Length: 114
Image (cartoon, rainbow, N blue to C red; front, side, top):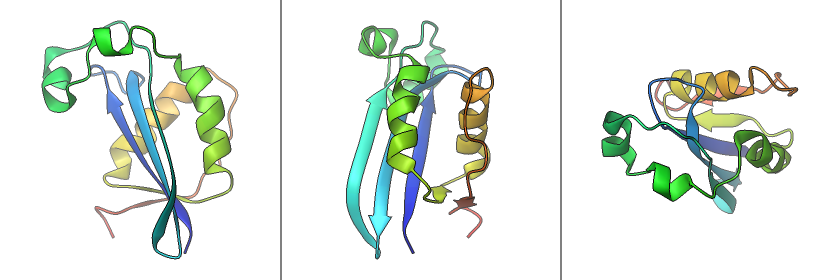
């Protein structure tokens, strides 16, 4: 089965504060492509920084979520998504896209549940 693994890091307690996205495309059980980007945010909770090490300084020149998402959405295409703890990652995606125009018909699976 082909799929794209997705992972987000957030800057603070708001699920709409994605500060990094990572995508890995799998085909036939093998990694075939990767996409990663920091995402600009202006407020970081020290708790989140302690978890992932991403700071305001690291994202100061990073693109906005909307700019990153245009490329990420193209990378995903029609592939199903796989996330470890999809309840978190898919909620970050939905919250980040809440005000934008986006495709909302992604098929996704949770490796934590599987």
